[in-house]
Image (cartoon, rainbow, N blue to C red; front, side, top):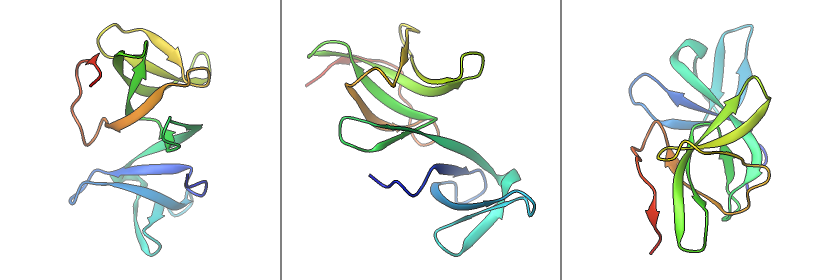
Length: 126
């Protein structure tokens, strides 16, 4: 688990990709990534680390798409979101719209993110 990066950024300009943020310069209005590269804050979407790992010990970030295992064989696909009015990270299931507080849910597995993948349904696990 990489404890150093507490932000990721989706680069909105070509080449579009996800990067780990090394430094945020709010006065200069830019982020630094990949040790030496930078770009304007206007050209990225910042994603906050939740501080919670998934079942494979990977840190979960806002915008991640996850499997939430309801039972041993059944899961739902959910998107990690920040909830403003009750400050917490939640997993919002795509199909059922059920909300889970990820701090209390152990069986979560990251399968992608909303910027690079298109997930629409849960199902039976293999």
